[in-house]
Amino acid sequence: MKAVHTELHRSHDPQFFLVRGLVKRTTEQPERVDRLLKGLRDGKHQLVEPTKFGQGPRARIHSPEYLSFLSEAWEAWTALGDSGPEMIGNIHPVRHAATYPTHIVGKLGWHTADTAAPIGPGTWAAACAATDVAVTAAQMVMDGEDATYALCRPPGHHAYRDMAGGFCFLNNSAIAAAHLRQKHERVVILDVDVHHGNGTQGIFYARPDVYTISIHADPVAYYPFVWGYAHEHGEGPGLGTNLNIPLAIGTGDDGYMQALDVARKAIESFAPSALVVALGLDASEHDPLKGLAVTTPGFRRIGQAIAKMGLPTVFVQEGGYLSDILGANLTSVLAGFEEAR
Ligand code: ZN
Image 1: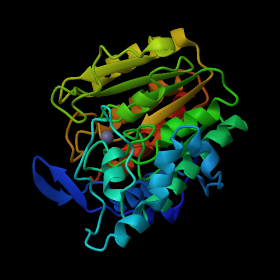
Image 2 (image 1 turned 135 degrees about the vertical axis):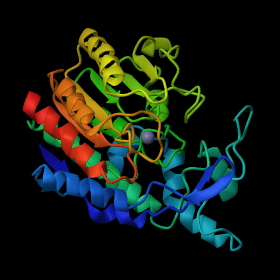
Image 3 (image 1 turned 180 degrees about the horizontal axis):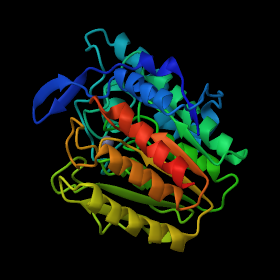
């Protein structure tokens, strides 16, 4: 399996992370990619540089106001003068009878769901590079590759049509799925990150052509807390094409595989012709964000089960934070996929 990667992610190096009122260094660090690259080298995956697809694929998913905001945010922020080293919102409007603001501080609040997506000088460039990585991987599958892997950073699955959040700015998985839709009538996004893919769910909630499935730690006790419940099924024409499978905190390999089997059956009945896997590796037993307890051999089983779904597949990197086995878990899931194909 070929892997798409660029070093351009490095311009995004956020520092601020607010956890239960404590300010900490964010876990979404550039070093994640170094460890994931080691996993790709250990798996003997050929690395491919992304093609520049530009704004078109991003504009299929994100609103014009949001893309303008992200592209101009840093310049407007620094022009304020008395502002911090990273953009963190201090208002979060609920948008009831609200007016779209003209001031950068207002826009920042409007376009962020939480404080976990600080914007720095190189955030826009890195986020754009990540969408090129995802679209390149999708295009390769459209051109005949059986499966590809996109090493995206920053991740994307918490980003909505017009809101950043949870380390995410542009929704790489959603953008890959929308790109695949040019060729494939029905596409599934299977999100195996430990966190619910709330942004992806929000983007496709009313759409019947992209089935969003997320297996994650139960939001009763875990981020994002207010989305990710089993009763969220979609709305309007998208009713029935959203499936959430929350798992009890600490669920291990066997419980995870049972959830994946529920997802498999749902995918079979939807009968798609392409699959995007939102590949978080933070369900690992050793991930610092401790939610689930999947082992390295467990990730191999996950890769095998996904392969047996029999669909052209684009893996898009989502979460997965610094632990000694982050790279090994990537090697494991991709090896499992390849050996079962
Ligand atoms: Zn995650």
